[in-house]
Structures are given as C-alpha cells and as structure tokens.
Image (cartoon, rainbow, N blue to C red; front, side, top):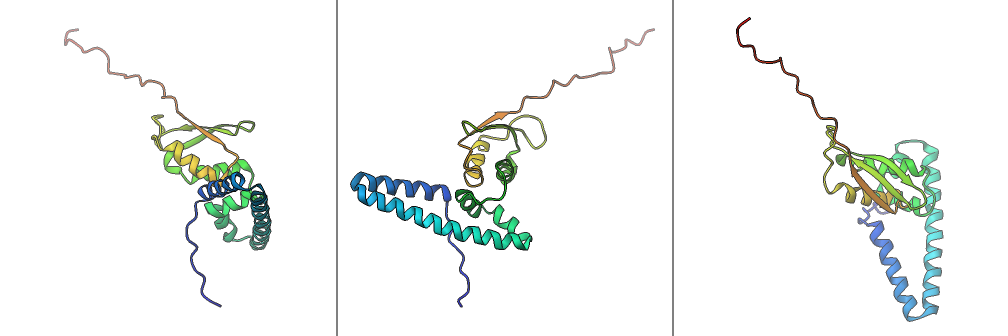
Length: 178
C-alpha cells in the first residue's frame, strides 16, 4: 500500500459554479447530453454521499477529536452539508463559520429563514463599537459558504457607539480668597 498523498486544495464554492457552468453549456448544445450529464452528476453525488455518510458514522463511533477535526474543515463541512449529512444544526454551523473569522469580531443579530439573510453586528474586539473593517462581510460570506450555504446574503451593521463619556472635573478653579 502506498503512502497517503495530500489532497490538493479545492474551493467548494468555485467547484459548484464550475459544475453549473458546464451543465449550462451542455444544455445549450444538446438536450440529450445535458440530461446524461445531470444523471451522471446525481449518480456521483449519491455515491460520494454514501461514502461520506459511512465515514461520518465510523468517525462518530470513536467519539474522538477526529469528528471535531472533520466538522471544522471547510471542505469536509461543505461536503457534509451538500449531502445533508452534517450532524450540527444550522445555528451551530453559523457560529462555527463566524468563529473561523474571529478577528472580525462579529455578533449574530438575526437570521431570516425565508430569505436566507444573516444580519451581523461588527464590533471592535475592545468593544468600542467602531466596526471591524470593510473585510468583515466578505470574510463572513466566504466562511458561511462552506459551513452554512443556506445563508444566501450577509448584512453587516456597525455596533452603535456607546454613550458619550461625561468628563468630571474637580469643580471651578478657586480664586484663592474665601
């Protein structure tokens, strides 16, 4: 048996778009070829989905760190979600995704199940309410694409500034006379 080789990195979102583009090109050229290609994709999805279900079952039987490692991996998590095998609920997966972009200090405000819009509040790690930079929304979208694809849009709001600080002095300057 040969030594295992490292898998080359794959972007799940980009791969999904590429598959859709190829199926669209086939549909435009030959309807029979498009039907055959869609059947092929479904068959492969069923095959790989069954294999993933088995891997998940075997790993979860061990109840070790291996399951946590699998669920924390973006590629594996996206495959488990794609095949409806991910053992965590949507809210847990959203929290896991946001935890992977912790440097942006994002809090969940609301999730609209009907539209798929996730509203987040950005805050500085120190809590000043200044926001966490322009990249917070894009970082959240990228992480959510793998862990929680049911989130179709992300809105990032800036946390409201805290109340103005009241400066308390020692009182009026004394004139030195009593």
